[in-house]
Length: 104
Image 1 (cartoon, rainbow, N blue to C red):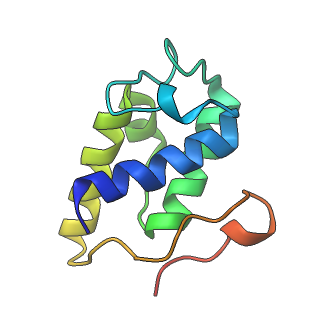
Image 2: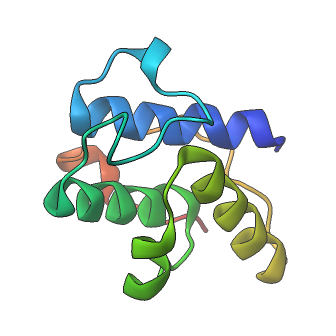
């Protein structure tokens, strides 16, 4: 799956967590300055991304990610190092009941 597909999936997670309009969630968007994520919402985004992409994002790494682009690059590297591609299923519509499954 291409980088833009990871961006799209991560943007869907961010929109779900923050109720931010899609046009504000691009690769250049900063989590704190642009999307106004506090620590709780950042944790929600990290957990949802881990579930969606089947990767592990350490707490230390999560706090170093400042922009959507940095998070996408991190996910790309994690998938590559695990020898996997991004799952092709669409992002879960909500973080509640549908977001708990990890990739195969």
